[in-house]
Image (cartoon, rainbow, N blue to C red; front, side, top):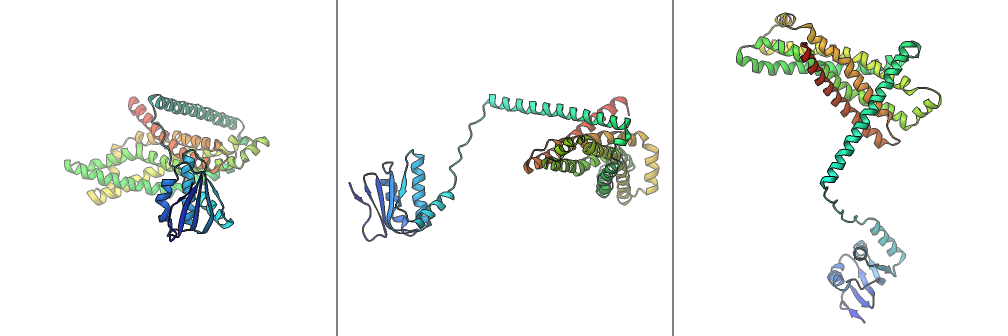
Length: 377
């Protein structure tokens, strides 16, 4: 059986004998259109071999034509072989095969209600397991701290001082600037509202209570969580990736004592100090904007602040600080200790450390607010 697909004047022609398709002439991008439609008609699943030994020339478009038909045949369950290629043509066909786009992605089946419940259950179980591990890690750190109190010589004072420098002193400019701007914003927005009722002087109370009780220490803790908490995870995680922590254990050294306790102690020492600086900067920013926008002089601002602000407003913020520091330190170090052996794990857990620390700090702040409201402070 023979079927001549094109006249002799055409640059490329095809013919079929039994299950073999033979191409002749020049299979180029300019001549490809001549046989595309006819090839689709005659190649209908009965062809198993494409013979290109009679081709005099073939470019990338021609190689794509052959590979595309071979791929379509495979999708139909038919094996289509390309024979008679010269070494150069074979190399070109292999190059095109390597660069063919992947098969269309089959969309995943829609999740059923049972699948959604299963996923939710797995997330809950994973969260519960992480909570248990965090609690266990907290207990280990507290036990280590108790041991250091009994044996003070175990404390690595140099490491504590170094981390105090990194956590506290280096963070003073950003904390002070942030709190100063928050004070400015509170005074500006508060004055715009209180002016409507002729109660501009109460902007002092608004600034004092907001900064001293909540915003000063809360925003400071959030900055420290993003700055120092992530640094803890990255530093300890990098050591875990390089197996330095395993080497410590092999040498009989406790990683919690060496790596975790100095960081947690430095945080608990420096966060109250940073909170105090944030309070002062916020009050200065609020006083400056009150003077500019409302004409409340610094002397009047100070007198109103002293006469109407209870010392407990300041104490509430300072009481929160060590608890926030403990949360940030424990989460940051815990995430670093569970880093795997690849950079992807380090990046993912560093991000998770920041998000979880900020979330837990806000949760703890809400609990403190409820507690102090109940006891009347």
